[in-house]
Image (cartoon, rainbow, N blue to C red; front, top):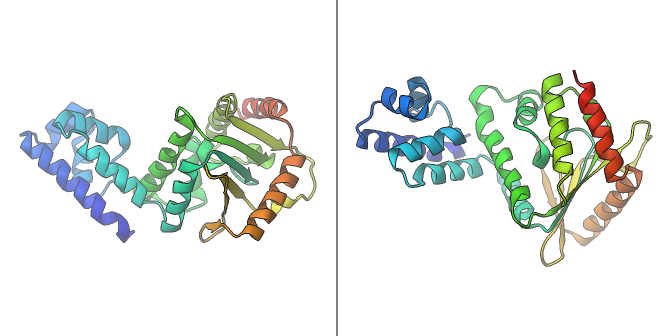
Length: 267
């Protein structure tokens, strides 16, 4: 966690400087930004990382001219594991992303509730330790909102729709969000149907990113850390794996119908 502390301290110090410069107590600032004085105090004492909305309101109220927002953006970037930071850069540059996920919804398509439940359950983070990585994951999703987003082709195993991550309400919201995203012209979803036996994808999740110069770079996820794959022989193997996985999956339209039905079954 030590790599996060300097940016948290910088944010806390600048918030305190801007607040006192404006002649406001923690209570007065809290009233103006519609948050409690205890939250303002917790952020100024580095006991809570600042959330996006809180940061924006403080910046606007205190005339920070974007300073607090920029510090928080850096804090979010730094909260990514060093090995994942490089992949996020690749993800942002890619023209196409081909993702296979046998266990959970891909990060770029997760709702906040679903991502939070994953961090609590799978990563076993507690309390405020969740906030920086959660903010970083949600910030990555902006790549799909750009004027020219990458094409995202995601293959999911059917079990993703049935695993109760966060409970029924979270799952219903997540699956409805998947359908909504799947209606975007550059997002294609494919479901490996229930009843499919052993197939190559069960060896694990992976992503293939095609960069503007037409090179492919792969990313493999595991229990300890992700691995970026660039060797020609490994990329060839991942491409073959992708073709095999894709061949098992339903077409996009049938997939959206199946996800819609699964969403309504979560009551």
